[in-house]
Length: 400
Image (cartoon, rainbow, N blue to C red; front, side, top):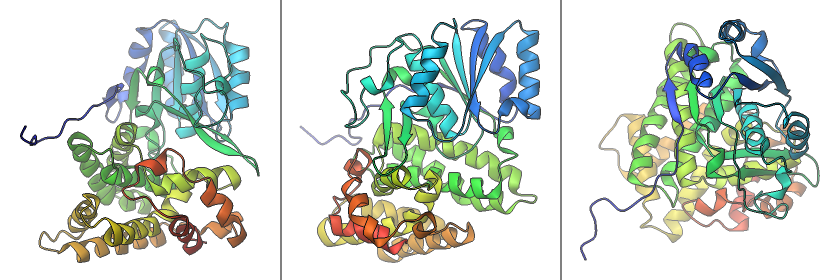
């Protein structure tokens, strides 16, 4: 049988997507299709106190809705989810609205999944933690509204849960039934993001796109989306971070890139940066986006070195070169020089965005073996090359 021109691939369930400036105005109609009783889950700096939040609540009130508000402070833990489910499961909610950054959306996703079953999130698959019983559902309809541009949680089936400390972990509760019914992505909601959040979240989105592009599970459809998202980051992130006249366009590009990063990672998995970000975020108070942003240049270089040495025919090598050529806007740039251009540009972004080294969060050389030992979760399994412990340790050591 002839080799197909386009190899077979599968795309898992996605939310319905409403994208565009001002799209939040559609939220009452979308939520109303499920009923009039809502659970609104927001971040610590509550959306409900913002101008956009007050306008939304006014429209909901005018539409005859009732609701309860649950704020999320920091990354959600299994205990937070379980306590919320125990106190809210009899609330008669028709839908859960998650409005906020990745932590608020992850919390909302997990709570929406468990309000009806009513059991502990620790009963289910958490990547090696707990009994890992299958999730049966049903989930309460979940509508995701991001107010940052980074995690892409609005388009994934993963609810990332964290326990911080020496015995901590950062794992995903995941199932297709947890996917949002709708993702309402309104770039206007990003207008109040401070520069440090723009930097961290933007590098998270970029890392998700790049790792999806070179993942061992990448396919032609995710490649097309990842290319589009990567170029949106190239044209949007620094412009938004710097402010001024180009910021509005940059903000729209980054809202788009973040959405695509979630779609891609949900289909392909990620790579070594996210493999390391999990234990770093569990053991140290390092924000996820900062971990990604400070590691991605070094991790990409070590991936390229390992691929060149051991897997010269890997499709990831020409993909890294393709992004380098696109960034340089030089179609004739050869593979090695194009990959070096990409690495140089990522290092420049790291510096311009003022992303600190890991030692700023208490990471020391003595911590490297423990970090490496806990870095081989699901993300590392789709890295384009199997890295040795020594190579993983080098990524950490060089970003101290």
